[in-house]
Image 1: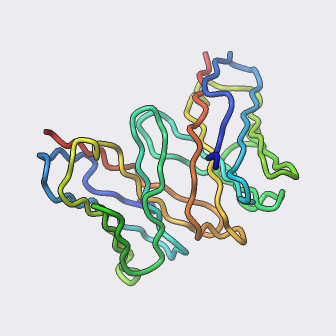
Image 2: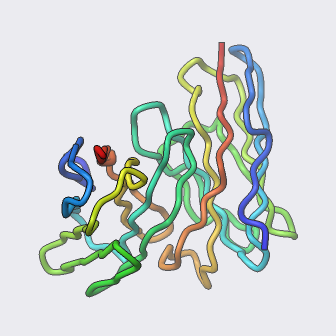
Image 3: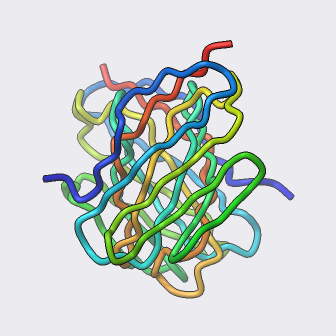
Amino acid sequence: KNEVEQSPQNLTAQEGEFITINCSYSVGISALHWLQQHPGGGIVSLFMLSSGKKKHGRLIATINIQEKHSSLHITASHPRDSAVYICAVALGEKLTFGTGTRLTIIP
Amino acid sequence: DAGVTQSPTHLIKTRGQQVTLRCSPISGHKSVSWYQQVLGQGPQFIFQYYEKEERGRGNFPDRFSARQFPNYSSELNVNALLLGDSALYLCASSLNQGFLLTYEQYFGPGTRLTVT
């Protein structure tokens, strides 16, 4: 079993829909990162969480340490949100990544 | 302020050759991590360097090595290249005060290595 599981693997939605991407992990962590990767490879850090909830624009990230679960929400989705979203957990000195969720927003 | 930079952006090598990839962190960042991302998969941790010392190593063979210089820039070296080493190699830096990755990671654009 992978240490970091993301769901769904692929998600296609209409513009304007509310999007939820889930991340579950199986070990104790010091922090959890949500990352966005566009075609071509560039990775942008969206959030770093160790507890609670963070919001940036239309993006919201939550984490439940007891349940070892985090969610990334996108409100009022837009085609420019189309990308791969990756959850990564900080285990000491290294990051362990999920396999990513490929999000496609259709106009 | 410049972000994380990596060079070269693309590289084609032949099996058995050696390659050196370079990374310059954001000014003030002392932690540099290296990741390998094979097409269609999530990144895999290779190394973390903090204050010029190796602080963590992923499950990669000894053909992979790295170092960090006094200016906190870093090099990743891969010897005896295999076809399976073809991947996007990503470098990330952070303001970590220690080796625990509890600060935001800033990624470079990556070096795409093709081994033929």
